[in-house]
Length: 392
Image 1 (cartoon, rainbow, N blue to C red):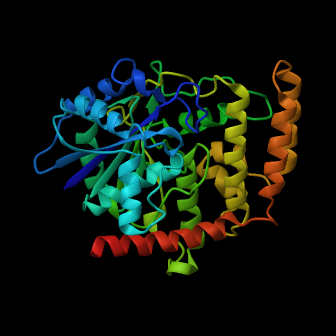
Image 2 (cartoon, rainbow, N blue to C red):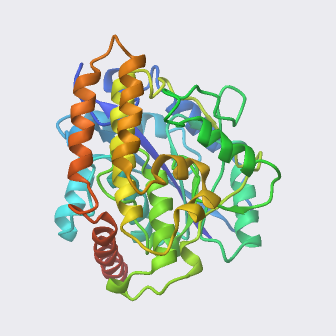
């Protein structure tokens, strides 16, 4: 089997530049303070079963689609990759733009998290990889990670996307305090972790992490990360996949209840990634709340514009998604959160946050946009695009 391990490296090239990433590495510090060296070291130590091939795909992405320092980025990454035990390919913004021109396709994009994640599907598919494992450059793999991946996939030929835990500070639990009581951002994630960690049996769920995702080529050929979300692209993918499973897609003749679109989670020690982010994403609390609420508003719009997956059924698949988007009236829920944010964070510019999010909510009102319908059309175009490039 041909296996791709995709690693995303997020970089800033200018001091003080605004960017869409949670904790990118400044280019001048890359190779000194970033965690990629430890990530690569852990990959080099993987046990690889006989007849299994591994190829690394490194996406070294400068924020804001900047290309002027891509040569420096390539040189720095390649210098570290000389230590790789496995064959590898490095892609910078320039390389993605060149592919965009070559194939005349907007699917080649480095605009933000979901667009970058999609490169980790598309390019391995071009190279005819069978399995795609997506991680980030602040994560360590345990020695038996790949060996266990192969075993689980062989034991579960009917499962096409599997996620597994993150371990941070010695635990897989999500122990952070919710920013406000009305917004169960962390406690609902922890509910899922507790439930999914009761044993090591594989469980159907829409809970999972993009930095620890195992995907068969058949899934990557048919599903793409929903575009434009500012963060949380992993949950956006799992939600979109479930909605396609429940509703089908008339634009590309996908019938309801096709197993390929069901997602799974397994609480297995060998598959548990060790996560060592250099900076907490929630350090700037107003920025954190804004990005997350925008993402949940977009996901809510997708959810509320479909028919088959009911709110009570969403809860069975993920407490987290249920508490974040399981509402008929998202605006009232948002107002409750903003009221509490205003009362708690008196030293912050909460008025700007309130205006921004209420305006964003109006933009994504159910009557103004239909993200699920739009996604189905994009999925149709994506599937046709993948079929075209794979036959050439």
